[in-house]
Image (cartoon, rainbow, N blue to C red; front, side, top):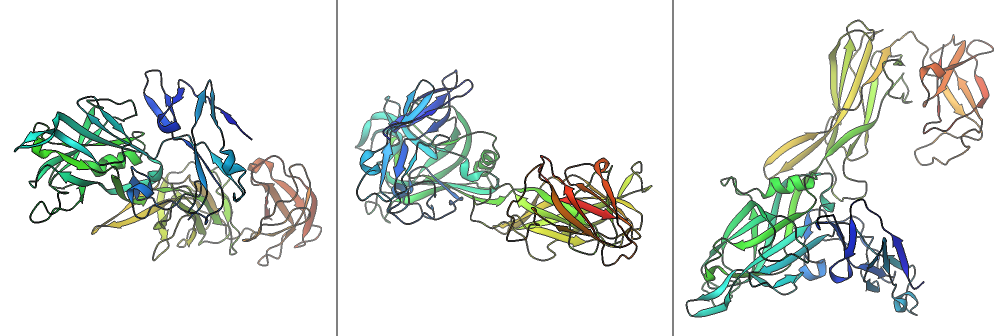
Length: 534
């Protein structure tokens, strides 16, 4: 294997080579829509990478360059101790290709499996420094300056040009999160003298390796700081290198970092670019140097998602009934029905280490005429858990207060996500689920027992092996509920079919079980039969 080529297509986009062996996708106007870095290749010599990316810190330099704490390894990239190589990406007519490192692929000390990944998508971060004399320093590795690099007090920084620094962040780690607060920080390593001067943080349009002075359009003020650092013992007291942090000051309405990052996480714009500049770009004494390892740290709460598995238990057991429409309400044989819902967040499973604090909230309404033509009014509400919080994917249930026999009711649920930060707390709510309808009839036969036969088996908590197939008949036995003694027939249908598809089978004798060997599922997501008795 000496060459790997992948087809690449996109509507209105063109692929062109990018910085450092990567690629870019540009639109018809030349704007960069997304970027991809050079590919990677690595073996399995090292330890397994720690699962779960660090989601509170976005850094402009790689972890080994920036020294950023808490940046966990991604299992889709080389782990500690893996042999690795960088693979420049070649861009052709509708193709993206890489050439594997054959020394790594076939080496005597190579530990298999070997992974090859020409990544394409939003780059984690990019940064650059622009100078008014035309110089640019794309992804610089040494500290660079901001401000007017000129002459003052008998000391010379440079010939009189102006520097600005830009840091661009991708949104991947913020998906599904509501931002509570954000701090941008950059490490100052030098100042022209020991006197503090103002540094501004501005949001701008995005950057690329082709960006030149005067840089992208400035959009909004994020904050400013009055600082001096990095001259060490040349100052008294000493001024060591120091992180300069930008965080919203409530007393200054023009500082908008947290709200900007919140909009960024919500997908209002695809990339976030922040510029460091001297507030006074005519003053040489305000010139400073900063390192390349700027960071954007965020505090967040999981956004709640609409609950799934919303339904009710028809009787006194634990067998759940599906969410039914108004045209086919679920028959519930107790006057205190139990309803349930599975809470969730918008964060993808396994994509975050932080445990959310969730709750399910239920509301129930009753028809004024106990028919589909009545008006609806709320008769009950409740939440679970009663104490503490649930986490993503928990199925929560609650029993309602006593409801009127014969009443036509509907219920729904939503997920609440709770947060507490910096002496404040609050809640976020998902939209409600769809309405589920039920009719209470305590005189109706209770839910029968359904026993699966060959080739199908009922799923358990720990085992849900697939058996059978669409079009393959199965054997199912319907048995009367222990609370009934006068069952004469059973009605059954698949969850995927409407009430009109219900079929009836009579019992040979009253209260006797009935076995059917011809129940055949079709092409459907749900194939379990649902049954009732009469």
